View 1: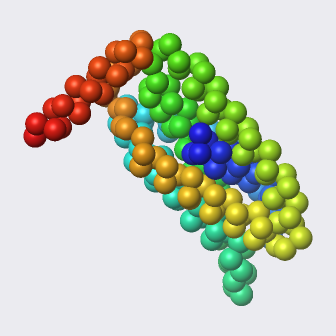
View 2: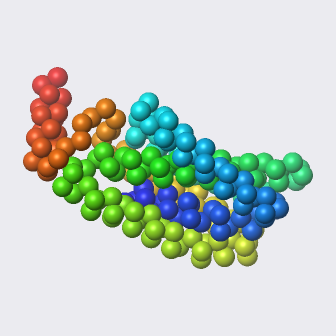
Length: 194
């Protein structure tokens, strides 16, 4: 849920905060909308090859770094184009992290509690989105630091919670809690013997 909170804040907040960047608002909204499509396609086609934990860590870290970089000011006029580039990479990474997170949560929980667990993660995503309009408005007053800076820090820190989760790629999905506990106990016993 912590990863969902940070991802949701960025996913819903970045399009709202585009007005604080020194770039054409209409073009930046168009570019953001167009960057969401490749993020979904990448998740769809490469989910078989991607590790869930590593993907979440990479996407949230990249999102955080690029979000912070997008508010740094430079003297060069080329920096304005770099800012929108950083913002697009950050939003693309947030969209990709969001897609991988939902797939990861489906694989993480057994069937009997999967719907409840996925609903709670989705609520955490929306709760993160609740704070986005306030941060976007605060960012307009000080040239984006309170929006994109906070977005970057929150998503970067929340992505670190992926270290606490087990990897699910290639594992079978369990139907009951007993089956899940047996599988985890058996895995711990094998690791303990080695």
